[in-house]
Amino acid sequence: MISTVLFDFDGTLVHTAPGILAGFRKTLSMAGVEPIEKIDERVIGPPLLATLTRLTGIAPGSDLDRLASAFKATYDADGILGAEPYPGLVEMFDALERAGRRSFVVTNKRHVPARAIAERLGIATRLAGLYSLDSLTPPAPRKQAVVARLLADHGIAAASAIFVGDSAEDAEAAAGNGLRFVAAGYGYGSPLGVADAPAAGALNSLADLPDLLHRLD
Image (cartoon, rainbow, N blue to C red):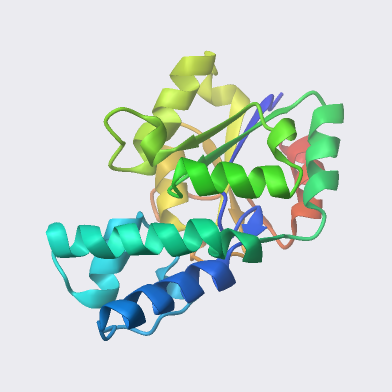
């Protein structure tokens, strides 16, 4: 039986794109920096510094750190308020709980805004844990390391867990830890294109997950 479900956050559980993209546009505009790439949903997913480098061409260092601090300030104050649940979010968690499955979040999003959004949307109490890159000390470089830490912290056997996400990185984080992967096809990334991490299933909506897990059991 699949007793544990790990979820990505942005683009899998929550539609966060409007607030994130508005935050990037505001941050770069206030700094007088012209983006070198279009600011759209394709840039959502990687850690903040990597995304800022992609958008600006600025290498890691003090200038990029100042942009990151400015983004954090505007996003934590305003951007999180634009996050909306994907349809059926709470009902899906309730169905997993009735089936005896625990739910965790593993995200590249910083812990503070991720927790704030989860609490605002009423799902924080439905999670057995919320892990982010900065949950680890020092912060993890990749999501795969966070998944490994979560499994170790809770004594979860890979065979009893599954990862649900919307990006190639999610698929790779699952494969790197021996987890089966379910692709959230409605999200921001392209999770089905990872040759060495084939998906055990795909979702058109969160409402499909309980039945899919039942079949995979």
